[in-house]
Amino acid sequence: MPTAKLLSERPLVEIDEDGLRVLKRALAVDVGQYIKALHRKGRQRYHVSMSKMGTTITRVPEGMRYNGASIPWLVQPVLGDPMLWEAAGAVHDWLFQVQAPYRASNRVFRIIARSGKGVGWLRAGLAYAGLQLGGWVAYRRHGRKRKTV
Image 1 (tube, one colour):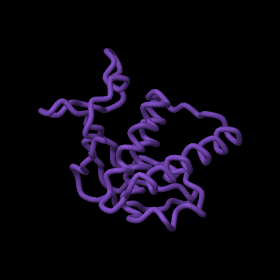
Image 2 (cartoon, rainbow, N blue to C red; image 1 turned 90 degrees about the horizontal axis):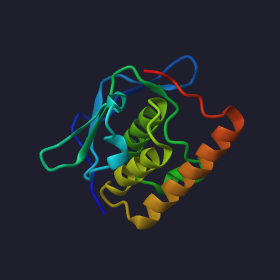
Image 3 (cartoon, helix red, strand yellow; image 1 turned 90 degrees about the vertical axis):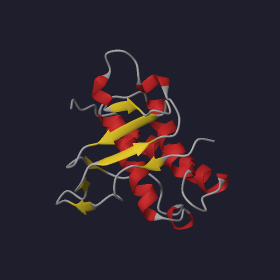
């Protein structure tokens, strides 16, 4: 399984008046794997690039507003480092906002989630299942709101 690396400082997040998280500094993550769906020709709006090792690096800009990982609160206590989930949620939501393919966005979340120290396949699987469930509920409630960046 690929291992993601945080290339910037840990996420610094603030909650705004609408209850959304706001990144106070840009976030860069090397996903540890080349994800073809994010590198399609003419899709520069995803803000991805390749490292010297051929892996995908994604950049989330400062000021991005997001709702965090859509993981049900019952699952969150067993997941470990909340900063890891904050980074995974920010990258996932950013890719979602810039209309990256749904499966690629979820795959990036899973890779980042699995990369945490002491996070085994069970915890990452629970987080991924929670993301799928929480995302499905949010989609049913609000629909997929596409934003142009």
